[in-house]
Image (cartoon, rainbow over all chains, first blue to last red; front, side, top):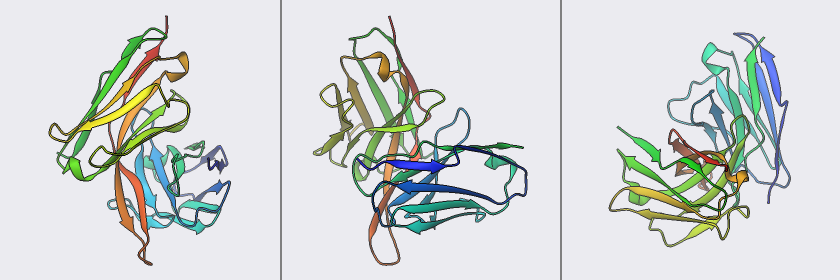
Length: 107
Length: 126
């Protein structure tokens, strides 16, 4: 199975901050990487697919980059709605493994 | 409205069985692959099982293989998972998720879980 890791596991930030979350795969997955946001008590929401493509309806302050084994999710200017946990997921092969998550909370 | 609605969760004793359902509405259910993903409260997301659009191909996480069975009824727009021989470690919120295909600028196909249900809680305890 492909193992996914994320860093940091949590971070504290303020509204307006630029936030970057890193995801690493245990082997090359090309650009087969998705990002999800999960607010407390809610289902996950797709933000980014294919490493850098923004899902319809997702604000443009979210962006993704990377290929191979190293990927990043960037929030250019953190908004109150963005305080949540973010998960990466590889879609290169089954099982579709997720990273452990990065919790973004209010500083 | 485009949505997925799970049901069937509850409290079950170790060794028991439970069947979860996920009813789809607002889209052509029969054309999508579907998945079950679970999450222990306060922990991360774990993929459990998948099924192709016509139900002829399924896959399972090693942790549930031989105990869980995924199926679908496209006439009823419903996804199922039959969970047998349940263990305490199966305690989690179970989500159904729709799998959508996308194409990148080079024409390669990607997929992602673009729609999720609200989840249903399964508790395995005596």
